[in-house]
Image (cartoon, rainbow, N blue to C red):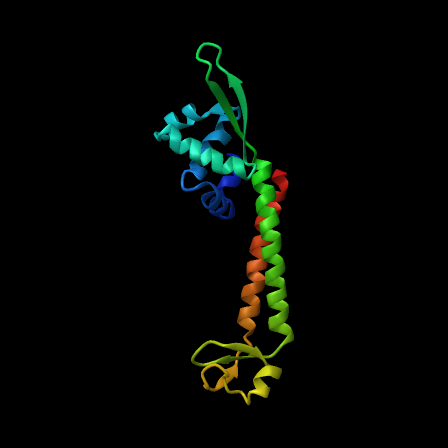
Length: 177
């Protein structure tokens, strides 16, 4: 069975697309298969893209510490040659940091849902805890519509499932570091 790449995780694909643009996923996959340093020209040839497009993607990744390079001068031409390398552990670290914050927010939201009795406006989707809704006589302060009880155990279960899914992906990423 072939070893599964971290780039196959949806979380990683979304992150690379956001950080490096649409070519970042393919670029990282190619570099991961190479297992050695590469030049931007090699990748451009493999991806059938312009070198400038590849350099743009590499520079975006470099800004976040995902792509690192070594610079050497060509003695004949005097130009610099750049050899690049992708740091998978840096990808994992950045995503883990971001997802840790996401999980914390979801846990707070879940706790808020379970600890308080909430009321929603039927028209404008205003949401408030019981105490505040009672002060307004269960009438929405924004639009004047009646407010209804919004506590839903399904919502808490959805949040629990979301947290569980993210934590599962975080465990996979933690192994990369």
